[in-house]
Length: 114
Length: 114
Image 1: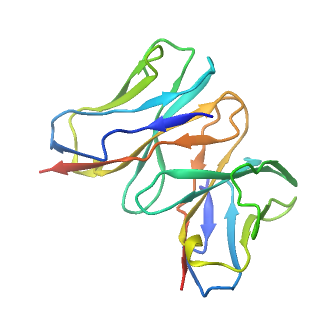
Image 2: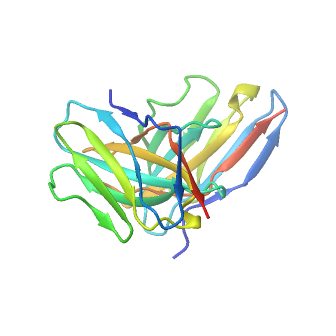
């Protein structure tokens, strides 16, 4: 059973470009979470999605950031017009749902904005 | 809002010895979950141990155990017989009963000396 797959592992963008980060949850998991980690800090929650629905986006910046989890295919975190402050590691996690749900994390995408 | 505090930015332990990592949290809820995650240099987030707040018995996973003090809102991790492979960042995390997201502490970097 493959784990949570994130790609790319590293992504370099110039200021003003768009960044697309992909996440395929573990088989059988319908809940996806995105987190951001700045250097030497803990992970910060961004958004929680189930198939075709955004459940909680309280951690998402109001502008330039969006996320989706379509019926078919991976979850996508999209950052438009990237700025240097967007440079961070972005982690995706998935769970099968239920209370006290264990989250299984991917290896993250390191976004570097030049 | 919940907060998680790890007061030790860095800890060091001799191989084969025991070390305890501290974590405190703040919440007004009575039912919740607590986690310790390990993040080695590979950046992968690995679940070490999980504790349900309604259980008085402390969770144990092989060499890893916790000291859960609900009244004090304290959740420390004890690593026995430390191994070189235990060297990593350790993050304490709080999960509410709804399970929408985890709130992470700032992390403790553990170094293991041979």
